[in-house]
Length: 483
Ligand SMILES: Cc1cc2nc3c(=O)[nH]c(=O)nc-3n(C[C@H](O)[C@H](O)[C@H](O)COP(=O)(O)OP(=O)(O)OC[C@H]3O[C@@H](n4cnc5c(N)ncnc54)[C@H](O)[C@@H]3O)c2cc1C
Image: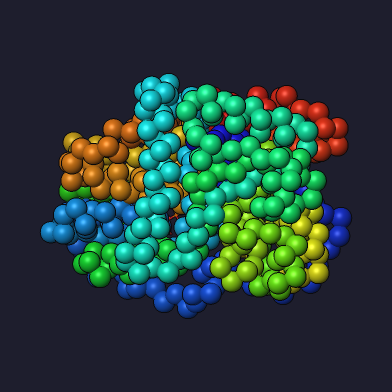
């Protein structure tokens, strides 16, 4: 499990107001997630009609909720299962993300090893690798055309400190037992063959990663579970979760087990404001690119791509030859507020576009057709969790930071196995644990998040300008990921 300071979706930086007015692409671009936009219109399913009694109620129709429903309905087809979704399935990060099904989890190898042992942490890593393949297997078996391409992940080092960190990381992982087939260090020439980014000094190729169209996957999963008899109620706003009860705007649901799968939006549920920190991640997408532009960029097998700056960037070449690329979002909003205007922050989108052009100057003259954003959830200890309390019937999963696409498959599968009470190789993995303690009250949260982001972003600038490691940022990044 390679470790980086942040995950694909987990991005942020101090807000930098650009010196120029928003350019026309900002007003011309569509502001729906590219991947959801192509599937428009998403006509919501009806809400529950009055009170409902089921065996398992799942709150949230993203990957976490739907994978739980998928595996539960397979393990015990007699179960009455309802997914309760406030808007439509895929409304949250699951329908808007960068489409990296990446075989890694937020948090460090050391944190999971501390909870259990190095062997167990390794078992967890390999289980996430398997989740990447499992998404491919299920998509194929269920006829979900989610444009799955297992092309790995190419990470470029573009400064001397990034290059040094890559060497150290691969050495460390080799020492832990990760193989050359899973992760390998690349020379500048080898890295450039995968992705012709400017200033590449070295690279890491991480094999257990697939590019997908997340909207196709999440909407496809909703259809599959519905066909299996799961009630998928959309436009159903859950107000609060009690022991074996869910209060919604459309009626009360009673259930033996209630699964909370609401990720960043957990902050809206009664008593859960400080459970997960909602953080913004923003994306842009180009038009489908002509052959000569693609020849210049590479990414032939559709590996997902990034470089190794602290303030994470993440991209993929989509099946229709666009580049979908994400990065720095607006800062965390005071009080864990979630606000659509923050998802469409024009200066941040322009900065993300400029960052992509800095990687691939050939994109300067292409059209950017989409810009959008979403929120992801960060637990206080940065460790995602799968938690089921049989005594109260309460369950929760999530806290993936920015790496929830493959992780939610493993989490949902594990949750289903825990609920049916069937021990498997997954149910004892070291992330099966209650969520971390809650975040600090304001203004401490706001001050802490802003300060961390400022340090990391300043470090990137410094490393780029001086080619010297920003040691404070390295230590902070380690601290944030818990090891
Ligand atoms: C822009 C962006 C890019 C990202 N890129 C990547 C990436 O490339 N790879 C990766 O691994 N991860 C990425 N992530 C993170 C990843 O998308 C998430 O970790 C993952 O989708 C979380 O899935 P989920 O089902 O737990 O949460 P969500 O997808 O957020 O689903 C939660 C659902 O619960 C519903 N809900 C919430 N509250 C209520 C309520 N009160 N009542 C009823 N329903 C409710 C919401 O409407 C929502 O549909 C990215 C995230 C963002 C925002």
